[in-house]
Structures are given as structure tokens and as C-alpha cells.
Image 1 (cartoon, rainbow, N blue to C red):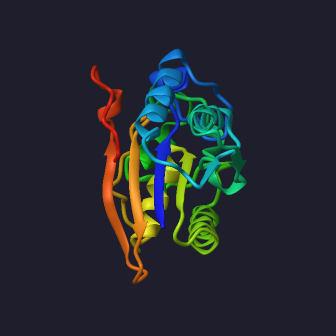
Image 2 (cartoon, rainbow, N blue to C red; image 1 turned 180 degrees about the vertical axis):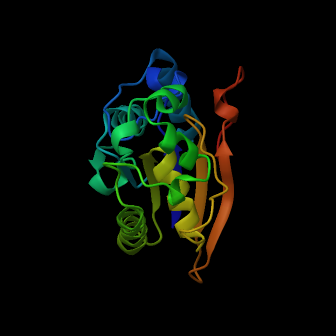
Image 3 (cartoon, rainbow, N blue to C red; image 1 turned 90 degrees about the vertical axis):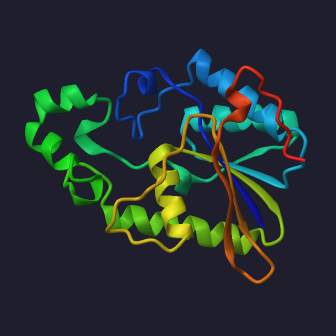
Amino acid sequence: MELFLVRHGQTKANKENRFQGCIDYPLSQTGKREAQQAALRLASISLDVIYSSPLVRAYDTAQIIANAQHKDVRVLTSLKEFRWGVIEGLTREEIQQKHPGLAYSLKKGFQKSSIPGQEPIDIFWNRVNRTINFLCGAHAGKRVLVVSHGRFLNAFAASFFNMSICNSWPFRFSHGSLSLFEVNREGRRVLIFFNDTCHLGETPYCPLS
């Protein structure tokens, strides 16, 4: 299976460095352009199935790609972003002002923080694992695109490559970026490329095949 991962395009909240979580911010004009450039990057291959988070910034990104592929978008609820609780919609500066204790604990990593109203970390991790198991089980040998969110994709990569829930995860997904994970014929999980943004530059045409 070839598993293409795309982080949604930028939103106004992203530009303002807000914790979006499950707040349904739409794509900005920049985000729409990033989605269009990702669609162009993927145009040289044929995807078998396209999945998206239900949140509009991811769904609209997926729809732009799907239109170019003449495919439908399948909404997968488990792809939605991590719920940040009381800090959703806030910048780090606003968190420092309103919740100074949380601001301090976040510096140690979100796995070690306890945020009122957040999605429990173990439940989030289980949701990520269920998603991976579903995709690998349902689409063996296929070419699958997943459009989701920064925190979710971070956890997805960590789980896919058998990292611990307890440690800081070393992944960063840029808006509109493209990553390719593979499950080969022997069942081994392989990283082909990661956080590729060459299609977002001034010369965006860089086909995959």
C-alpha cells in the first residue's frame, strides 16, 4: 500500500498561531492555493481512494485534490484533529495571560499536560491506531490519500513507525505538504519521503512519476 499524507492548507488561525483543534476554521486564500498546488503535484498519479477529516479545512483541501482526480472524498471521522479543550482558539500569548499554569506545562510537551476539556491522550492514541489499522486492512496494495491535521498526522507517523506515546514525536507537517508512507509486500512499513513542499514553491511542477 502507498499511503499519501497531506496536511490541510493554511487557515487564518494558522497564520495567527492559534491552537485550532476541532474549531472549524476554513481555508484562507493561501490555504486554497496550497491545496491546488498539492492537487497539481498529485496529478501525475492515479489515487484509488481519498479520505478526509470532517473538519472543513481538511475536507476542502481533499475536495480540491479529489476534483483533479475525478474521485469522491470519503469522510473518516477518526481523522479529525486532537481536541485542545479550553485553549482551543487561543495563541500561546493568550494562553499565558488566561491560563499561565497550562502555558508552563505545555512547554514540557502536550503528552505531559492536562488541559481541561482536552481529548484524553490515551483515547487520542487509540483513535490514531484504529485509523492506521483500518487503512492498512481495507486497502492493501492500493494507493490511498489521507488529508488531516498537524497534531493528528504527527501522532499518525509516530504510531505507524512504532514510536512511544510517551515521548516527544519528531515530526512536523507543513501546510499543503505531501508525505509518502508504504507498506511493502513483506508487510514492512517504509518512509519514502516526508513533508515535501517542493510543489508550493515558485516553480511548483514536480511530478511524482
